[in-house]
Structures are given as structure tokens and as C-alpha cells.
Image (spheres, rainbow, N blue to C red):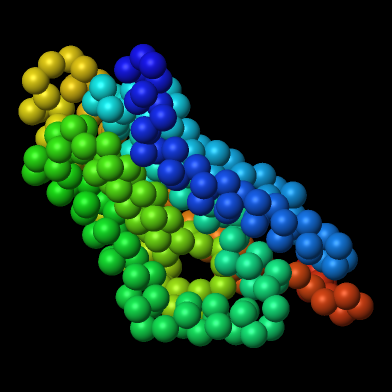
Length: 273
């Protein structure tokens, strides 16, 4: 057996294919169940769910995963996909809403109680989610954790799972479409998003200045511009949700049907002398 084949058999990333495949089957099954019940689940949400799971899977096994072990540009691209792109697709697919609709009444109530619990409220807070997501990225690059992850496949896998889960938490806290009894005010969410954008830009600048070679500088530029692109998409979603919720109240009132709107009569010309 060749070393390459031996590595493929022992690839820890293959372990993640099992839960990702299970999530795909559960999501597709729940959507099909809703269709049989006469309550069709939107096709676009199913597509978003499958797209998010597929993009996440590409980061754990395959060419992109192998590139992330050997090249800082691959590692940075993997972070952008796991920490930002895949979470955005997954959150917009409304997985909690689908679960609440597909589960029986008792299970749906237990899930609702879990979402309303104090630990869930703490984790779902935008500031907590930002610290777990962007804060951990700073920690990885400021310590020797990144180099250790490149040498240890299991640690590399654990970091990837962390970035995916923390990215989902942050995206859900800022732009979630599922019911959230602890939704933060729009101003706070927008402020946290701005802080995340600034933190990514600052980290990219620091990494660019400290990069030992051109490859490292290209990885920093990928974080800078790729992060800006994905964060702009997230900002558009946040603002679009805000407009959908409050924009109608900002429109000019229209006359009621049947209401007689009288125009002022023109003044009569004064008689000439």
C-alpha cells in the first residue's frame, strides 16, 4: 500500500462525512415529510441546506482539505468557507424551523425549551458568538496553535469543527431566520458585525506585515478581501431583514379607498377697477 493511500484511509476528515451525511439525510427527509403533509418546504431552503453541508464537507476531506494542510492560502480559504460561507448558507436554510415543523409535539416542545434556556441565550448573544468565532481566529494565529494543527490532523479537524459551529452561532445571532426569543436589537447586531469586519481587517493587516514570504502575504490578502466579500453579503442580509420587518411602516401613507380627497378651490380673480 502506498503512503498516499494509507493517508487516505486514515484521514480524520472522513469521520466528519458521517454526521454531515446524516444531516443531509435528515434535512431532505424532513422536507419530504412536510411535502407529504401538504405543507411544502421551500425548495430554496433545501438547496441552501444542501449547499452549506456540501461546502463544509469540501473543507474536511478532498483536495481543498489537503491544500489547507500544506499551504497557508488553503488554510485561509478553508477558514473563510467553514467560518463564513457555509454558516451563512446553513443559517438561511432555517434548520430549526424545519425541525420544529417535522418533529412531533413533545420533541418540538423540548427543542423550544432548550432554545429558551439560559445557556442557549448566552451562546446566541452576538458578542459571545463574535468572541468564539473571530476571537478564536486571533488566538489561533497569535499562538503556536496553527502550526500545531498542521502537524496534528486531529487538532486540525477539531479547529475546523470549531470554526464551523462558531460561525453558525455568529451568523444566526446576526441574521438568523429561525424563531429566536432572545433576538438582539438591530443596533447591537449591526455594531457586532462592524466589530467583526474591523477585527478581520486588522488581523489580515498584521498577518500581511508579519508574513515571511509571498505565499503568506497572499493568504493575508485572501482573508482581507474574501472576508470583506462575505461580510458584505452578511450585512446585506441583516439590512434586508430589517427593511422587511420595518420598511413598510416608513412608506408614505396612501389615501383610503373611497375617501373624498378635495382639492383647494382656486381663488376668484378680484374685479378690476
